[in-house]
Image (cartoon, rainbow, N blue to C red; front, side, top):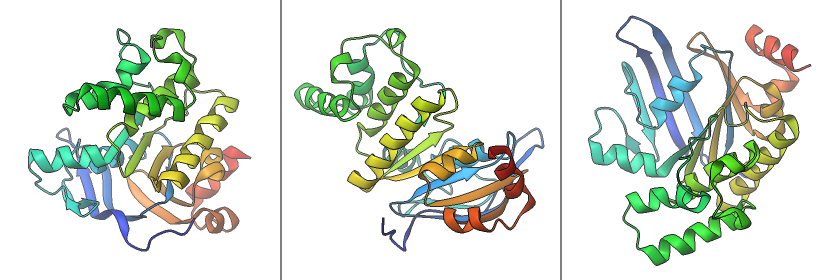
Length: 249
């Protein structure tokens, strides 16, 4: 894929300190090219989830600026944050599906909240379920699905608002290797077909190897290395990257 030179996500010297004094991120500057499959890797506690929450406007930085698709989240009002969340949808390790709603109703939920008319909701939901290979599961409840199927429902729901960015928070960590490959393949297809920018946070180098064009490595809240995946795998420059590669060997 030819990546656009203009970043769709830009972090400029971002730090995040919580009220209890915990420093989750320190002076992180990062640019995610439009249309990239971008991986953010690090061990537990490295600051990956905090970084994702800053991109989605769920947290505010203690210092620095976060810009998403041209919109600054520094002191942003509620409407700007809502716009960013529509443009940057999230999928989660725990799937986040509502047990009392059918698959179709789960996918349609963002459209209901956006007050999309019923006929359009139905049409868009059916198309999304077909795209993720679950057209025959529309009237099934999540408890009757496998983990991989639940994650596909989560992806369909995230795509309902037609976002430009898909943020994946350890989205394959709860899945077995074969299902992981299937879900990552779907994300890559969506990236290529829709021009969707996909940001994956993970602690698994195998995920980075499988689908990411570019990667950033976090360690104890600091960005220690970033670049193209091929270059980093061929010649890692930091000990943390070497250790993560060793874990994957």
